[in-house]
Length: 112
Image (cartoon, rainbow, N blue to C red):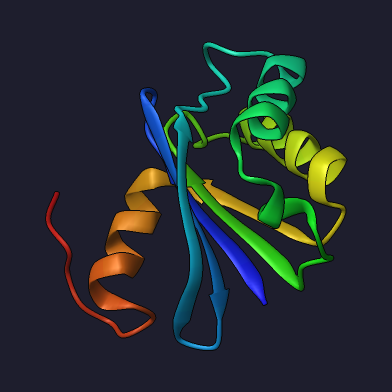
């Protein structure tokens, strides 16, 4: 099972996914490394996500977020997620998340 999260500066949507099925779904406040420290992000994740997100070890976490466009800011989110969950983490921009949401891994154009 994996966690997929998409975050703007105001809201983060989280999904526990097994195969192609969403098993659990939740919302927390937005996470943006330009406006929050690693500690603030970790605190928000721990306090706002339902306990089911912490009950087991996940295969992978995919996070797509605002402010995740350069290596320095990606590391802030990565370290926060690893501190809370421990599995491998992939962090990308919200723009890539929107494109993958529309096209998956198929070639094509997604206009935002």
